Length: 236
Image 1: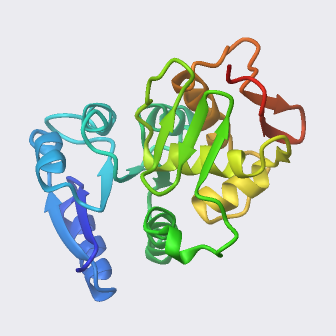
Image 2 (image 1 turned 60 degrees about the horizontal axis):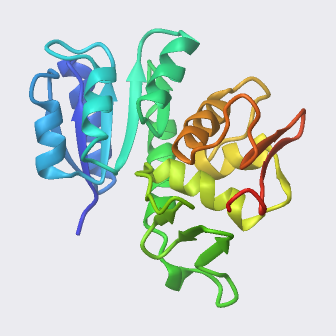
């Protein structure tokens, strides 16, 4: 089956250019031109990936992303013409997996889409035989096959696909420090430029979902100037 993409963009000309380009690469693209029915469409159609503009008539992209995330766990890539870091942080906070600034270079967009699809479509059979698919630390467990996490209190936090992949990357190297460079390359398919703080925002949101202490994190620790460390011993 072809990969299904929902493009929510009010600029009709830009929308047509993006859709035509992606269709030449064998993606199935549906288009919306305002935000009024975007959430309902995302939930009903459940596309593999959503390309979502921020400045939309009817309902803005931030609100759409926040509401859709309650029922949609696919990939969301947000786009904006505004060059403001706050927009990117807010988008990630509301559950976006990635963020692109306009004008969008088609080859970069395609590379980002492919990178995200590689992550979420990877199956246990694709991994090397020695690679584990489940980890347990105290009363914490994470299962790659069904992409579920269980916390010591018995709850199962709802993670986006990117949040799960971020947590899995840290768990696979539990007790070790994982650099921002490694995490950025894994999650976004690009090199860390030394200034990108999107990983920090994702870690902060992930900590909240894991019940970590935000003022003095014990489950996912920040190792100054080096990266992040998943603790094996904070899950009783």
